[in-house]
Length: 422
Image 1 (cartoon, rainbow, N blue to C red):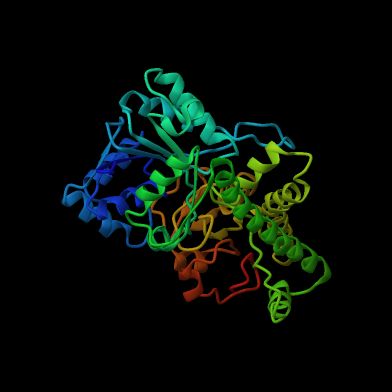
Image 2 (tube, rainbow, N blue to C red):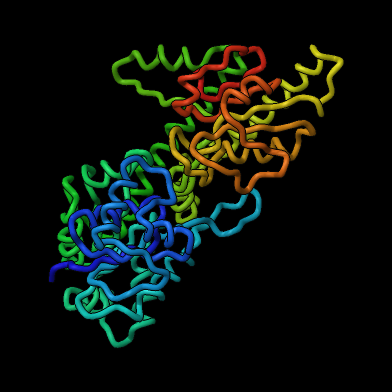
């Protein structure tokens, strides 16, 4: 069966670009989201996120009638679920467990409009077994249809997992060019999923089973997390020993088989900062290295806050006529990585929030990719780069946005540079 109408559930940083890619190939695409602002924005041919090139593609798709956004699922030939998979609340020092309620809600939302021959693909980064769980939720809601877990290749509904593997800021290009890992609950499910993605994917569609596909994405991001943890731990060691970590890494990377990553203020985003916990929560007794890497990266923001506190103390010693209330601190960058507006799991956000709570003076922030602050204490002010550089007493660089690279801070005495660019 061909796929003439495609539904994408969740129109965020992955769902919207994916919907736009299908629509750009003249497929009818129905995007579904619970955010009315996102729905209204998309239906105006605009986008509610920052992603290069995406605005033009969405505008054309909406104008030509291939893409629309709605709040409730409508009938389609294929459904792609791209909703969040956050953590369940947990106590300190407990291992976070994945929260699948968004996937469950999406499953129950699309179930009433499913028909024989439809394909359902879980794109959300998920713990091992989530695709099978989604299939169970669908089966519970539609006893009149058959599913792969009970009817195998003869099932009415085909189900597969295909994790996204794209880099924010390069999503449009990478959705097309990157290879895709596709894991169906049966070989027919995989085959049909490959057929769907080949609508726009130029990379290879590599077929495996659903559990391996789920684990592939978790493994990719856990590997990165471990590598970043090494760099972050190295930065702590170098600070203790009075060594310039940036120079050290540059020297070590001259070895032909060494490629150490750059340290930072921590690890953020809804992938690297989250996915390793899905492995740890499933196999806590075996994932020792992965668990330790998560702890190293989660603790880096606390180390940064200690460095700021120490610098404030030093500033007061050298400026005895001033009080802490009179010290203004500028924080550069809130996104979890350079040149995007994504604040999810951002260590920079956490650092600024905690700093604003602890510091009695003014805290100002520079984030070129957002227009207003959300989730910040009232004493944090969003300002332009030149204002922050001129007004602040202490400077804290958290994210290496291109604007900061182009306009380096001139007075560097009272500076903590978490990215080594100033």
